[in-house]
Image 1 (cartoon, one colour):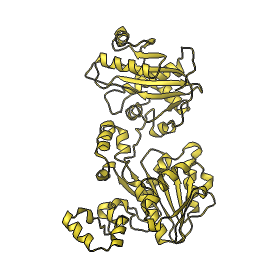
Image 2 (cartoon, rainbow, N blue to C red):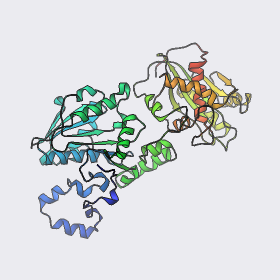
Image 3 (cartoon, helix red, strand yellow):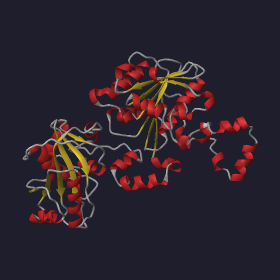
Image 4 (cartoon, one colour):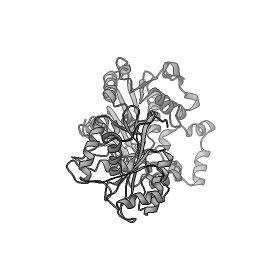
Length: 452
């Protein structure tokens, strides 16, 4: 198959999305020509309402990857494609694979943009949760699978498949790749077996493999951003995500749909940070610290403020990024005091190279009641960061959530020195490094057990 990219502007299929663009009187005149049954069916006519990039590319193709920002309409595109396949092929056997069975059901089947919500009442499939099966009246069937159980895909045969959010599939034990491989090996029913994968990009091996397949002609790729679907998203949502993530690398990934590449020679990589991401409940904590990298002035760099903890399991965890931008000493000191109070911190660790003892005085003036330890940087940022990066590699640090600006900075710190990050200085990253030195590399305080 020749190399090609699904370019909506060059899509040769007729797109009949002209109806929504008609004026009120024109639309009313057209609807008046339809009988009641046709008018009732109109809302279920996906090709009428879909954007061109949400429609399957012209075939033949084996894999179609929609790699786009959040809110693009990926789930709706996947659900409508499954509905189209089930309607056209009574002998279809479709695999529905998500990160977990719960997500397969909640998002792909019963979600607001899932298969049931997209199906007309007259052709609604029967969903049997106990059998993890959807059955259409014409005999087509779809089966739910969890990518976290790759062996469940070993053996079953399918004619089609829809894989949702493949970039968040479980990386432990190479489960994501094994699940994909088992699905591909079982995709052998029908004349033209094929599958669609929908995902927001993340730097994981499976997604890289599929994108490399575009160059080899094995995968057709559709790319797009959140804003392509802005007409169907709340304005408040658009404003909020732009304010929060618009100038970050995470924003380029989650909104623009760009796959972030790593800087060669950086101490941290995107893939490493994804492996260290933790979504499970945080275990009891032994120590909590707030680490501070004060700015040299109120108009320059940010004040890095990172909340981190040592768990009973001996793993360090990043809990919050409370950094303050262009803050006066009084304002960043209040931010530190508030973070320490909110997280019941045991200690504040502050770099004293900028201001010396004045740093502690400013913190005390902001009513920072817990112990403050001043640390002095005798080595460069990269030299201090290297042992902390090694802790990440060893699996001894976890991120309890997404920390866009912090992670951008970590991925800009270079081995042997140098800074290739987005800001003038890696203030958040430097604060994190001090926190992990305090918790894991130079522990001083007696532990006490707590829960959060």
